[in-house]
Amino acid sequence: MVAIFPGHIDRTHFFKFFPATLRECPEVTELTVIAEAFVPLIKMTIRGIDVDLLFASLLTKLIQGSVNLSDDTILLNLPEVCVRSLNGCRVSDAIIRTIPNMDEFRTALRAIKVWAKRKSQSI
Image 1: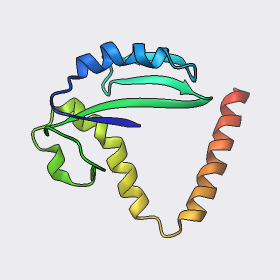
Image 2: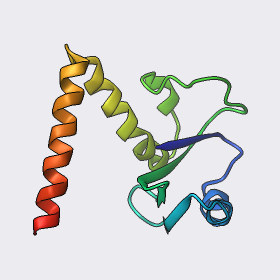
Image 3: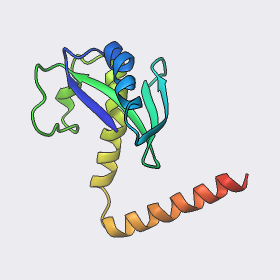
Image 4: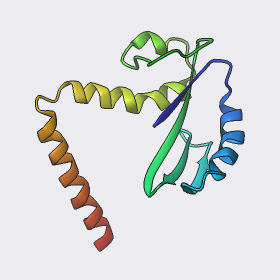
């Protein structure tokens, strides 16, 4: 998951202050801030679901509605760390656009996730 903010929101503030807000939520557990990683993120579990939350700040004064992450112009003049944060979503969107049958893909993906989870638990 990527949290997208306007340019005046600073990455340092996000990683310094937002985790305290998340810790107050009873649904959030196992919260870890990894601000110095190649792709900085906040790892947490929300209602039993593992979530990696990344931060990206766009060079705009306001974020209105949805953001088209496929638009290459949003990457212009962004810091490299913000480009890396957006890259996972951009790649996933590009892959999804090439899938001819989404229902079959979802079924296969679920099966692979179950297999991988069982395999990791048996090791």
